[in-house]
Amino acid sequence: MGHAETKVFTAHVPLSLAEKVDRLAVRLDRSRGWIVKQALAAWIDQEEERTRLTGEALADVDAGRVIDHQAVQAWAASLGSDQPLPRPR
Image (cartoon, rainbow, N blue to C red; front, side, top):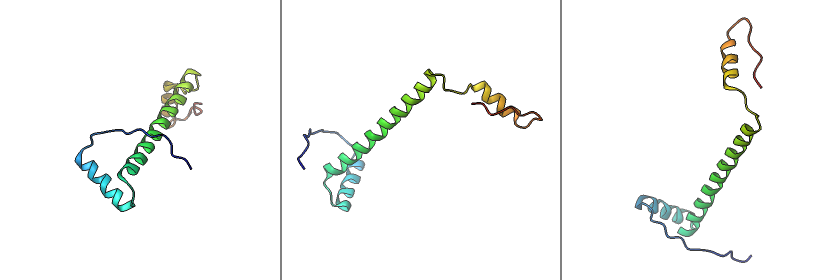
């Protein structure tokens, strides 16, 4: 398997964080760079997923696939009454 192109990033991190990275590197028998790369990749995946989900939610709003807030409030208020409203869709 060939090596992907790489780029060196320099980042100033708090000493406490650097020490945690060093301890993990020792415990996992990995390099400091490997730990940082894993952490960065995981964080970026999480952010991309959050962005994707936000985009889907906004698309739902644009397409009118939302339940009106007042309809939900009216339904909730009707639950304890003699004539509960059907659940809003």
